Image (cartoon, rainbow, N blue to C red; front, side, top):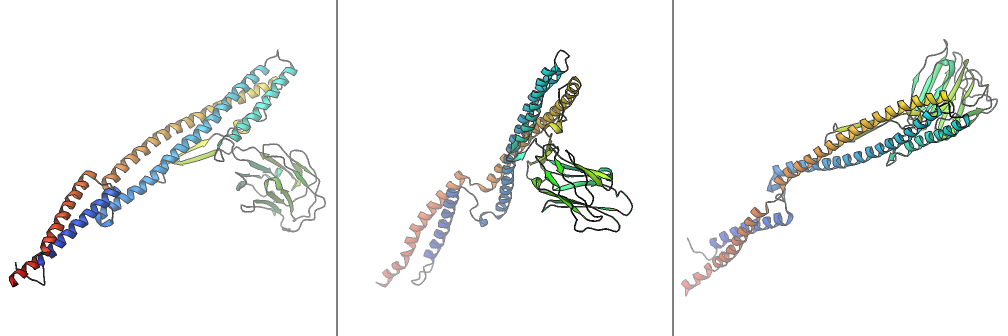
Length: 408
């Protein structure tokens, strides 16, 4: 090898090798300190991409695990409600059976009926109070039935009055019926027009009043009378439920439980009813949007179970109540069986998700986690090379000074 004062090739070679060893040592330190085999994309680009996808799946799977846990808790709450309802129905059946006996006097039967009615109220209370995070599980949704007499129309806004079902036909030729519902303002309108008329400002002769106490099935009263010119409209404001109804007709009578009168020769009856719309719950228990477990819960109030309005104040009513109770208990048993089957399914779904999480974590670990023993061996080797490189570089840097001896 040529000796030169200007260029020290040996030192350059030693410096390059020392830099390589230092970089390897630094890489090993980064991997060992982070626990990850891939600290930058250049370490393993393909493995990094696969591991990122697995991390995304793992996030979804862990959320699904949480969903399964919450779903189980929700259904256990519902099952507890059903269990309590079953206890109440056992007592109702006892009362109904006792009231059918001739040895019970009318006064004693009245006492039985008092307890019976209180228990019916308790059924509604249990149904309404069985909820999870504000979601009513057994209470159902309230509804409003409007039946305009002989017009042959039945309109049912349901589920908080966000829509309605409507089946009708025009009563006579030349008349038209218009039904509108605004989901934003929650205004429900029904208008009847004749061929010569149209919607216009109503000439109200007398005022109407509405007394709406609740939505539990009790009828309410409309008092007063009103007369409209043909083709004009009349608006009734149900402020307690945020509902306006506009009809084109004459009103001349009022009665408890609704209002009647001339509605194109037919009366109009309005009744706010207890909720009977079942609650359907959907639980996402996997990564895909199709990994859904659904269950529709039986509404648990007295009206939905068919015992609303029953009594045991006489033998005939007690017999009818006993039959209704039998049917209600069968429905409850069916509901609990369905709920139990869903809980069993959720248990297996939870186990499946847990296995998926375990296997996905293992796959991600293989791709991403550092092998500590192997990497520490690499680090030790790099450190030895660094130390050797430093020593050799020092020796190489002394070579030009040896040339000075030739000049002495």
